[in-house]
Image (cartoon, rainbow, N blue to C red; front, side):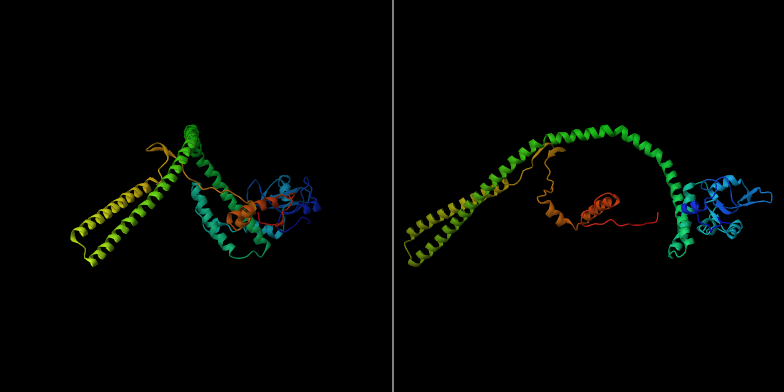
Length: 360
């Protein structure tokens, strides 16, 4: 029979070549789904001696006209027909986990049932993945298996959405109730802070100017204190040297005592001036320290915060400098991918459009 095949669905070109009539079932062996998502079952169609069309679907009588529309695209061999009818699996059917893993009966708890089913599928799939695909049947099994696993994911997604919907609706209701109150209060707070920003910046400018002048005063007083300290040291050293010279010449006692008293007085005066200036220098240094600029009060202060931002002065040079950064490479690959997907887009220098065939 010209429509007899292996088990694979006929391609569009093959259907055009064979041109089966939708209204005239032909004799042969096929496979069909009795209804959507139903398992494939073997089909046999032939004409008896009187010319009547006989159709068996899964070993049971069926209406050939209703079966033919799908079955005509899926011819099989007679040997395969009898094999599947006897209980053997289709060549492109992955192993049945319920049979191989002796899965328990459905419990009615979809999460539990799907978890057990997926665990069995995973164990079998992992064994299948350890070897490369070397036959068409194995490739067909992989495709059917992928759809079967996608079916588990679809069921899980559907029930996930059903169970989560009340929580999402409840969360959305809470969001709607509080959204305006939360956002409006935050927006007004931000506007108030923005409104006070100019004032704080002026205070900050005045504070910077005060610090500058205070630093200048502190530097001046520090230099004066250092000079006074040096003068005190000079006076003390001069007194010691003079006392040594007078001791060598042995002058009169009264004259020597008077001179020593005068020298001591000058020394004490110089040291006092140095101490006073050192104290003023310390106070000036403290005065030069930064003072906080803020508005409000404790627990409700508004102040300026420093944020470091980039000011790009040479875009081209910066792009070259950052070209090896992971974020830059990722962005460029994303843009290049978008251009490549648009067949009408002109390709910029440095890339090409190449095919990338993937299983789907």
